[in-house]
Image 1: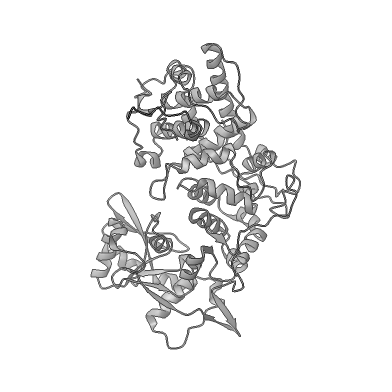
Image 2: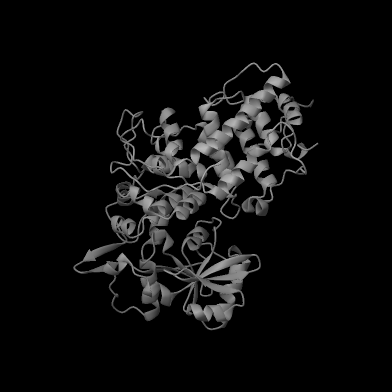
Length: 536
């Protein structure tokens, strides 16, 4: 049976958890980004910071220069870092550069994650070699980027980013206003410190020498890791003016790690949030993909809403939060957050999904939010998406489900579906509504009106779904036409192929979509039927 691999029906061990290429014209109404408080009775903040934030940056201004915090070098082994935690392709690059006599360090988020015992999304290397020397060292290597060039060194089926101290030193940054070479420091220490001062956040400014087993901390990154805080290296307002993409990176890092934004970071982020509309259209999609495809989507959506960025990036979803009476600091779940919480359960920084999957989740939820359906209709629809559109089979399996559905969601409206034909018609209607929702979310005019009834909200007609994604998402749902797709091969087994999922292979995306929907509509914790005890 085509659906056998899903392993769900009525069993108690239910396993689940033609539009143009549109982007925003970057119009923005100057106002408070977080002003959509029509459902709130009290004034709410944009951070949760119960610690002392009196020292707002990692340095103290003294006359025309800056005196850094006390430099610290940590024993990597004492921090729990060992070589087995570094990916094999990264080791290959490190070893070859070291063999050539160059200094090599791991830098940025990967060092932070190794200390926190988390899986790094990727590994970045910085070296004393010039980029042209890196290219000569590896047969499969090219220089990418014009403004800030780096090397992509290809090892097997992946690539490692390698930057050079010499290139980094030429990078213009507002941090130069705060740089002053400390007295008595070695040339190597100064080189590392100068590079760290050009980074975005203190917790990303740690540098690891994997051969000396030393972690260099020259800007207070370890202290902020202990306090679970996201703090900019230079004053936050200056940092976000210099690069507004750091606003989105701050959200992404805080959401993924469960960290707090420091007061200065939060207020500066709030004041400059509309500046993200200056970013390139592909950058918006890339940053949103980092937030929603790597296992921290629910936390990212909550934080975007909390700080007032959701109204700019996803106005349609922000409008949903308002209609749900969802407060900025609300701890409750709604259906949108539940869908992404269940998606997060399958993903990780080294096991991401293709962007078409989370876009499909947004579109599917919008269709249900606008037109609530019976849980049986939703179940049948998800099954049909998974099995290539075989509605008779999907209906048979859906009718055998005995687990109770979550009755807290306003998107679910219990109906009397006494015949299979009536159920089929409702499923077909949902399929049509999903396609309408997809068209709406790629229509600038529609998106710009999403928050129109809340005049204090920032104006945004930002559409993050390009034509290529639109087509992919359409294919996910296009099979629900009443008969099984020609040439469809049933997917077998319950194990997710994460390589296929990241690539966006249709059958894998459809399978995970179905599992997430079932975990949301029929959560396991609602099945509290008493278990029979065996005789003693």
